[in-house]
Amino acid sequence: MIENHYKQVLETALLCSPEPLSINELSRLYGDEVTPENIITWLHELQGDWSQKGMELVHIATGWRFQSRLSMREYLDRMTVEKPPKYSRAVMETLAIIAYRQPVTRGEIEEIRGVTVSSQIIRQLEDRHWIEVIGHKDTIGRPALYATAKQFLDDMSIPNLQSLPSLEDGVVVDQIAQQVINFEQNLLDESAIDKAMEEEVQNLSTEHEPSEDEEVQHPELEEKKPNND
Image (cartoon, rainbow, N blue to C red):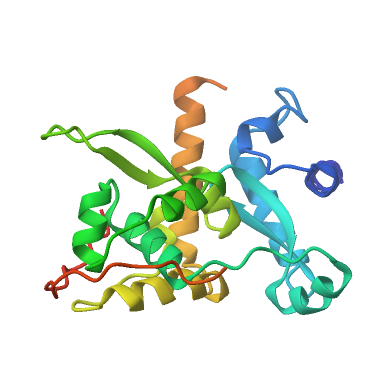
């Protein structure tokens, strides 16, 4: 009976929270009464409880949250006057290369795409908090190194980069872009989610706690094999 009550507390907290909640944050609900392993068990049970409903409990980069299922989006969108921004293929291709090849410089992105990457494209992705500069490459000019930010993972409803769709050998850049556009509709690999949760518990134990952009064509370049690192 007490476990059912604790699970109900967990469910209520997640439904009422405007932001994703991590295991560490959820642990504060109970003090020292339960362990992170208990919480993860209840989270799995809640996922099952909501499996036939219009909302689902998902694990993303910054924690756990309830969200509407993809099948509900077309109906919910009718209630929203402001439509989400639409991004050009050039923007999505750039995002795809960063996601699969990170960390990567702007010059390396241009080499892979075979076209110039405008500052507007980079700015759009930074303003959306999908990419960020994580350092500078130790070469002439020390160009910025770009990588995806946690907001990218949260917006795509995945816990980590390992949950991105795997790429086949020989896939070309426009196919990578299409993967990024579509992968939110794919079912996540359960083993990847479980692995991410196990890593989170281990960390806790250690701590004790819209239009196409204008492009300038370059000579044709050989496509590089995307790297999942």
